[in-house]
Length: 231
Image (cartoon, rainbow, N blue to C red; front, side):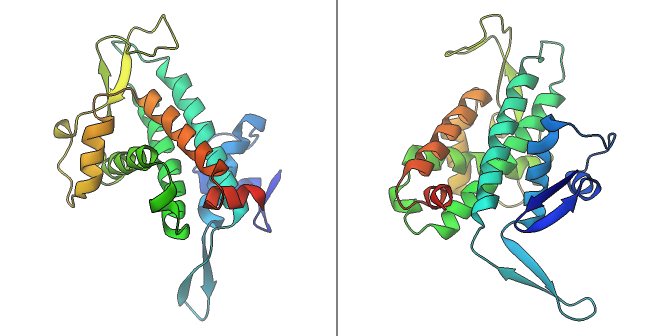
């Protein structure tokens, strides 16, 4: 099996190494979105050009439309894994599976938003403000998970509305900021957005709203995601 991304053909072994996959090499079709996303991480918006010896120059390029599509797919697939994992959380479950998939969702959405923010001059003025603030809060959570190894989710006492699963006994919510390690470097606007829009609220609803935000960006004429869809 091989996967062609941005003109590069990657073997299955190479992709699995990128993904950090430690299972058997016979990855099935259900693994394709995860592997495509892993390849996108390596072949995305920065190209490394080796000059001589160990000299390496990092050349910034405009994001490739294929990479943006792969990142959108990566986020949507990660959300599905989170929704699957969250159904397994019980009062006596440690929630590590849900934590892992939630952190993957944060990685993808923050990677996408960074490209939108840095490569779309209309993003800050024309993109939905509520969606932008949600992602801003999610960036604070991503930083906590990445740099502080914080357990960014928690269980609440019973499901919250709207609840798609009437049999759910617990709700997975964003952990309040004061219950997590103090960051070494605080980004005040991100922290304010986290406290206002995420802390104590269901993680699944946040991810669903952000899916809607990305969909609105795909439909907004002239936006980065719209241009990549039309390319």
